[in-house]
Image (cartoon, rainbow, N blue to C red; front, side):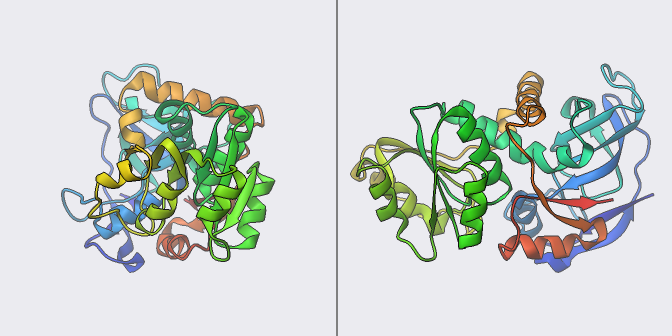
Length: 324
């Protein structure tokens, strides 16, 4: 048996209950992983509340972690006992030990610490696909990036600066705005005290931005669309304020023949080659010091409920990890 956080019913942070689960021996194509650190992401909230339904109860939430391979099942190649590895998905990370398909983990280079890996795999590979595959970001790009002081946001600020792009970010406090600026944002807008759309228009001389990256959802929909240039792209990759509902697609025509997409990381890394390429690109920018992973909060595994409360209350900045 191993320590784990179990969800027996959808609900608030209180449903994250410490318990134990049986791990067993790894089957064909699986490895037995002992976690050294576990990542916290907003998708964990969606799973806990049932926004992303799970097939059965109880289940172990969590999509990201790092650790050491302690056993390999039949047909596993390229991995050995003692290897340091990390992953983003499948679900089941909130535990001390787990089984996981070998083709979903990647080896960690020596220069990437376990805690850093656990704090960055999902968020960092999200920025990779947003900037390199959903929309090709370069020196000519002007973007609006919501929640720029969060875990994904701080990585995005640094990566955008490296690519030469102009990143206009939003955050809800002056302190968060200052933090994002320190990490490479070109401009920051406090959405609590400023009119985001008007400020974007001012900063872009009325043209609007090429692309909006929005993990907030319903609350920022109109602001996001109104900030885009003609033919601009709205990328909705999360819904922290609630999902976008009852959307009239005709609005895209009225606001400038806009494009809209709702991507997810797990489509972009479904193929092993794509997973490895995204991870290696992330390892490269972190190892070279282009992107610094800021772990601003640490919670014990058993305190996962408190971690969720802090995340939902917007009390966190940068990345958060659970310690085992």
